[in-house]
Image (cartoon, rainbow, N blue to C red; front, side, top):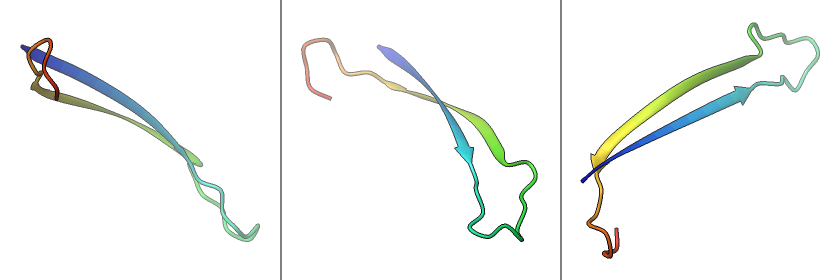
Length: 44
């Protein structure tokens, strides 16, 4: 059996000081992970 997991993460950065600015202030990425899934009825 094969499993297919997709995770999407959004990171927002906020500087602690007003004198610091970030451009862009957010980023997004997608990670896809492929792995063998355990047989049904087993742990894993």
